[in-house]
Length: 315
Length: 315
Image (tube, rainbow over all chains, first blue to last red; front, side, top):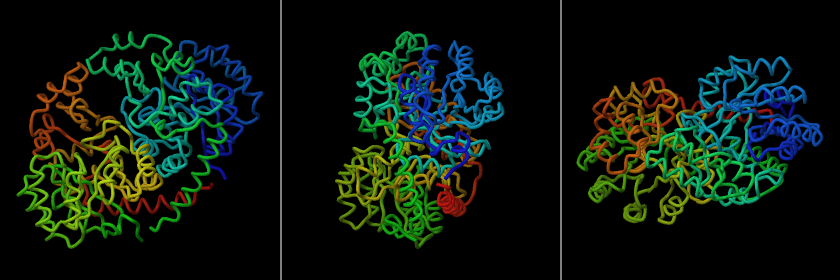
């Protein structure tokens, strides 16, 4: 029972838990890795010294492979890269930046490198830079998002046609059905964010988890397109952004409205009115806070069941 | 080789060609029906007397089942409904309006009724009104679109959980891979628009077909959200809309910018600068003008091949 991705990461199931700011620390990552998937520590919301502690704790909590996700646009990326090498991290997912800058450094240090993209141009660029696999993330994904707004259903086949390295599908995947759909599109694995953001081991504030599981259809929208597009869950802040955008606010005005540290305020500190709440469309289908291992097992079991259903189709 | 949808429509393959303004007249509909799918005449761009001629010609061109799509918001809908009965149309797809208004009338006249929706609320309402099946259309679809912006990958499982009538997936489907993905999500059939808009038999202007097959990623965007959201292909008009929206234009200003008959101007008369060009995201994957029968056969063949691939996965 294996494929290119389970072999690349040496994991049991082709299920990767997305690196998510304020949600995926060592607790979530180690829980997912212990359950047979690939857990990822999201460095995007951590100072370098905090990241180092999370890596060390993760190594204590699991003997299984785990990864760290690094948004390349962050100011202290050099310091983070050194920590990854010093702490002997084996797998790194890079995102939000140019894969040309750090891929060589990581590969030279024996690290498996995966880059997150949302269009063919960057998929080809990442492949050219020598990454081992890519995550192709569709419009329905939570958090920062591609300007093309290409959905996972349209994106994965395009990316598969253009690259020959393994492709991990992301965006809109919170069930075994959706996972199987991505395999039908040619994906070699799936990366799952929102469904793990509400895991018991997620460091998201309980208020945020409750708000996610009570989210309904249409409650997330892609906002702040004049800055960096981001999928936000409806609340006072998101409504204020929507109104400002409808009235033609420019990037400076939106930047002022956004201010600083709003994601922490909402996702980590639990301010559901003023916080920036990043989550995917699939939140509309989530309705329970469960252990990460149970989430993973349920998705995998449904994947196998639905695969049987497809085999039994009367066609 | 059958399922609920092939039995409901008495067709060979669970592939439905979407009713599309300025593209799907009797030529396209009869070609798809003759190839074993369900062809649909799009009444949305036809005066009632023109629609009657298309129905009559379609009946001459095929002995197989075909359907007519009727946007319920159109002013002459009563006249159209009478024509459907007089011309003995067996299957009607209704869209853009309240399914309560005409479903009974159509059912009483022995017509199979399918309603197009983009969220759970209207799926439940359509079921309650007694329709025989629904089309669930995701954000990536061309033309008019749901306000929730839910993608096909997220929409289909939600709809399948909420209704017990058959569900036809639409939006982003132009290949056997995407068709199989929708079946993995629980769909009973697929409705395909963009891929048939560029069929030889499509009445779209050759300029429009050429523009579709040269479209790239990100070239379609959901616009005019302050009026009725519509997915438009990038051109001078779409750029003008994008700019007006970025500057905060209100619905009256957008309505003035849109004016009248722009879809006809672009899609039927071939004005690629000033016309309103409605097409789906999947246009980025289309690169050839082919006969409708070939399009259908290629999709079906790929569907069966990819089904085999899924069966052979090493899991």
